[in-house]
Image 1 (cartoon, helix red, strand yellow):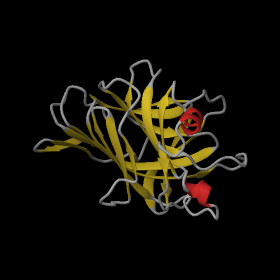
Image 2: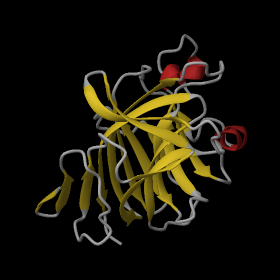
Image 3: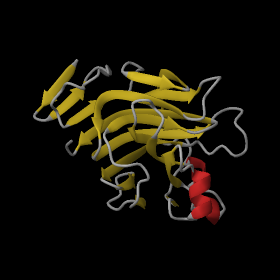
Amino acid sequence: MIRRAGAVAIVASGLALSLRAAPAASWRVALTDANGVTLHGVKATATTHDGKRALQLVEASAAPAEAFAVVSGPLVKDGRIDVDLAGRPAAGADAGARGFVGVAFRMTADRAAFECLYLRPTNGRADDQLRRNHSTQYISFPDYPWERLRRETPGVYESYVDLAPSEWTHVRIDVRDRRAALYVNQAPQPVLIVNDLKLAPAAGAVALWIGPGTEAWFRDLVVTSAGP
């Protein structure tokens, strides 16, 4: 069931539906079940995490290079994305796992390219300043993975923010043209600013993204488009 108030489309009772034909500038998905998401290299489970209903994502047994769940809804070029998320290394993950969890946007129809901003929750309070400096990350798939960005422009596409594994964290992403800004836990200033998004600006899908060896939870996704 979908309720609309003015220009806002709200998904009630946890049911996520495709809203491509809706004229609303804003849409909301509760993410309390897997309805309305298309899985790519992940398994999804409706569950409760830290007292809140959520959608859990873990890698599928034969996961491809990227793992995500595409959320049904309008294609968005510019606008704002808000979501509550939590992540931690999955059981049995290798020592390099950080609980990578974030949001992909402007995803192409063939899923072959997208922009992404994500968190490394175990880095936020690490007893190592260099690791702390790698708490947030921008990547652009497929040509600009984190390894290339860190090697060619160290420190430019990642930053520190206070995080803890498994804790609910509010993430907001503002996107305009070639610029994206990442806000964490309602902070008035962004923790990471990207002024040169690598893909040409174009409308695309929004997806829930996880990295290798991650167990993650997502709830209450709100996407507001700034126009065509």
